[in-house]
Length: 122
Image 1 (tube, rainbow, N blue to C red):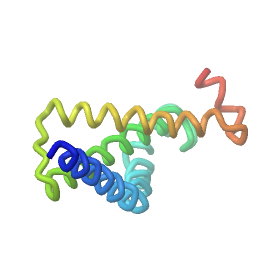
Image 2: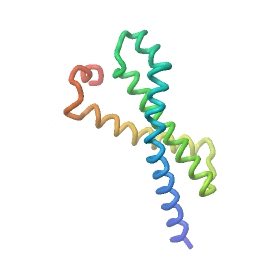
Image 3: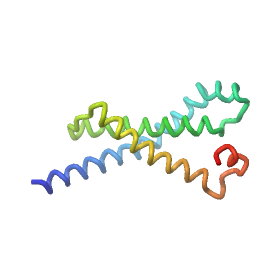
Image 4: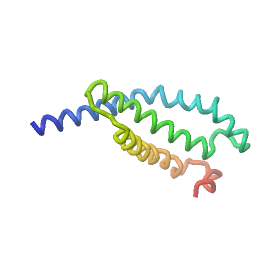
């Protein structure tokens, strides 16, 4: 019985991640547009910076991690009856934040990243 439960758990995780990957194709770009034409404009004007600034990157990181957490959690709740309390949501958010931070860091560390922004970060 233990093997069956772990198999179902693995399947649930794969489905949740698959739904997230599929949804990211639409949701993440839309959240970027909401940021850029909403609060991002205030930040850009207040600090007299362009759209590719550290505040925008931080907002992108937070939006992406939060959206991933909500999509994955909703998938697990709806299709696999996984119970989510506040603690579980926060752990899931922290895990998504770390994985998204690695993705964002890989952009900053790539050789193609504009050298003008590196002094702001390091």
